[in-house]
Length: 425
Image 1 (tube, rainbow, N blue to C red):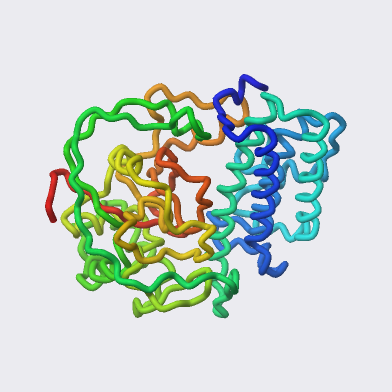
Image 2: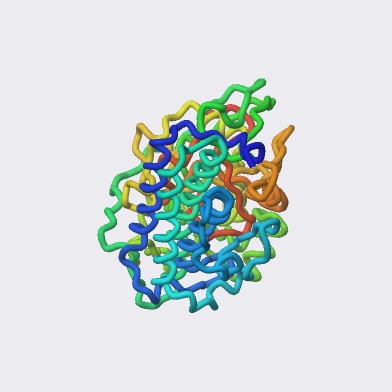
């Protein structure tokens, strides 16, 4: 098993890694502390998973990849869970269909909470019985990172669920209000071309799809100094852009017409308010626009006389920025307006790039079941970068690559512009 995960790096060390495990697992519980049992079971669309499924699946990950192979005498909490809470690991076994997760009224939420406790106690016993060795350490690291991904999914999924409720529920009554300020003027920052390197550094944890580090050849270009705002996107709407076929990719034009899209997801019809994790709020025209598809981002860029950046352009720019911004810990859970000292490269919204999600030159997935984590999804999806307002700040880095289908909108997805030539605009 060691050879299967030898490329997963854990820079924390055994003691800090055990503390990190406990902290991340506690954070997941805290994210849903104000939900009622009825909230945990709803699946509002196929892309969304019920909250209790996230809580169970992350526990299944630790049980399946650490406890069953490495904890002597470990007894599964419930054998049925191997089927119910497997996500997409075909090499592990069959799984309940994703689109039918909301049909599972049983097991009960309290059963899932007991399952989490059972797994946590078993992990603690395992780590106390033996040191975190070279086999367990990388898997524990991967499981922690995996749980942080599901923390973000848990919040974006429950937002989608609550948006369907006319009562407009609030996920957490103690969320902070986003800062009310005017954002700085949008500018294009000149960027040199030439031979650059992108990809993960060996100094920190990274997923396999971030490697290997490799050279890219960039043309001279420019990149937006901040994210596109809701106010700027309103101008796009008011210009009649949703009715102008010349702005849209063919698939995008078909998509917006088939689905009746004429504004971002969660915006009110009058474009004056939007649904948030804190309930319905007045639209902040200075905050980054969120919940737009790749098709909408691409059409906006074309309307603005620009384009979306490639992921190589984005990463070389991001490597020069500090990882600061509006993250999950900010307890805002909504994009907020930029200030002069922050280009909003990290946090607020995931940024669509123009790059297809595909393997880097020389990429090989991890052997074994954990190799199903990323590589098999490298088809028909678009790369996004930078994290969002519900991403944990210690989970993101410049090389981090996530990916969505071009019609996805339920995630915090936004827009940064780029241009082919250096511009002073």
